[in-house]
Length: 164
Figure 1: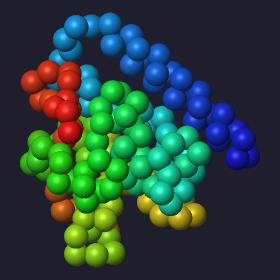
Figure 2 (figure 1 turned 45 degrees about the horizontal axis):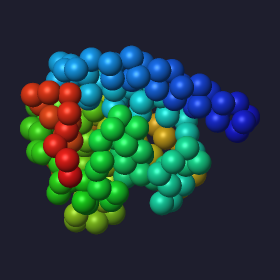
Figure 3 (figure 1 turned 90 degrees about the vertical axis):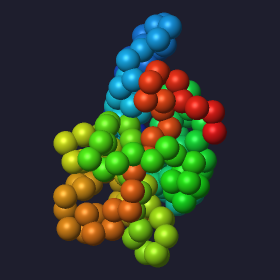
Figure 4 (figure 1 turned 60 degrees about the vertical axis):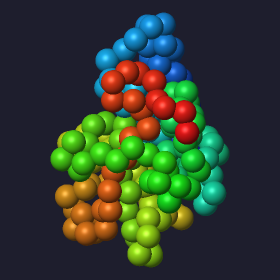
């Protein structure tokens, strides 16, 4: 079973990589292409294994997932959820676009969890040990009550992000 999940995740990653490679040939893309690529790659990793401290195909924690996905689309972001929030350009919650990061306080007063917004009020995250990468819902009571802010690393005016 685990082998089938891993094969499915690698297949989805291969498809996302091919799609992104096709997009890379354009000199300038609309602003949402980079965010859409971030979201699509995150979606392709749903079902991947949770691993504390993980930031590669062997497994992910929440900030490792965000780090990995951004890295795969050519953006360098900080590694921890707290650092990602500090470095990201703030985005109003009403202005969320696919690929934006959503930040939560789960176990502490500060930010200690991050997800990647997928659209329609849903986000992708690595929730906790024993769980796989999964969808979460921003309107669900647990996450709605703990949502702190949102941020973006890709530039809203072009396909490239400001170096961080």
